[in-house]
Image 1: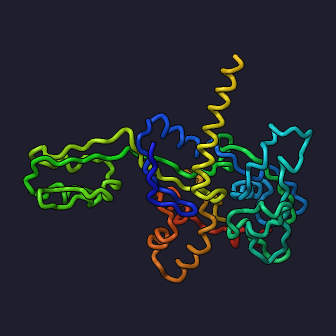
Image 2 (image 1 turned 180 degrees about the horizontal axis):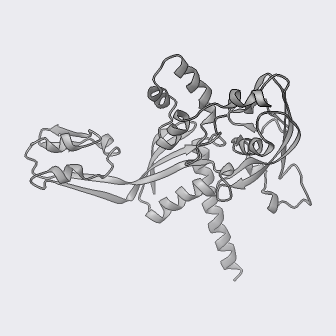
Image 3 (image 1 turned 30 degrees about the horizontal axis):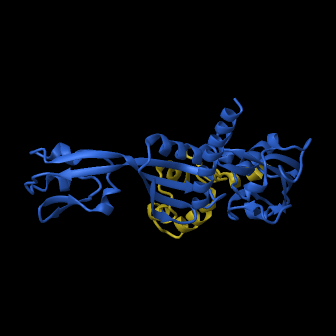
Length: 262
Length: 62
């Protein structure tokens, strides 16, 4: 298995995974979307809410705010050994504001300084003159498969690596005009696509269809995948990929354990 | 209020709303702002483009 990183920023990643099966690539994609443990608000104790939003609407908005935390130190509530709640499975955050004011996710006061909303500028509600908001939010660890509030990977996807080849090109240029991505260029021995541009190919076959002498073959390498990964901010893109791999490893370790005790 | 996440993909969009709104008022064209903010998918773009702020409309009746 080989990985070639094309882009790795805080929230975005693009890489080519080669020498891997479709099953593995899809497993990794699904793990990023559904199996990465994250922290999200699941319960809200409202002490005062005179804002324009109902309590339930407010609760929904709060739950969808991504929270940055070290989830290795936290456990999901159903796996925790405690009776009701403890610092290992529950994090409390309070919010207190009085209008006129726009309440932002950054106004939360967390009980743990290491745990805070990953974006400070998410507007929660606009308070008009005299309106008040006072609440305690309880955050728990969960997985994306249960609710979108825990979904750390956003629209993570892959496509197979495109392989476009030209044989005996007669330099008629019709494929260059047909390509919707404008990646085909005229080289010395006929039409060609540069290696970097090949990543842009969507395998639409417009070039092959328009070619009068069938000089173009559009194929795909089913052992190489171009991944696009986006994080919601609760992890960096790099951590998200690591956490997804960890989740896959944990699952196969669980399988191994079951088989050993069979 | 702008939804916190995109309805379709779950991407966080609310953190980009205020900058988007300010730059639209300043006269920039919305497509270049969205490209600039890396709101690339059309599901997230429609969230921003089609959003209507209703807080000020509702507030007098509270």
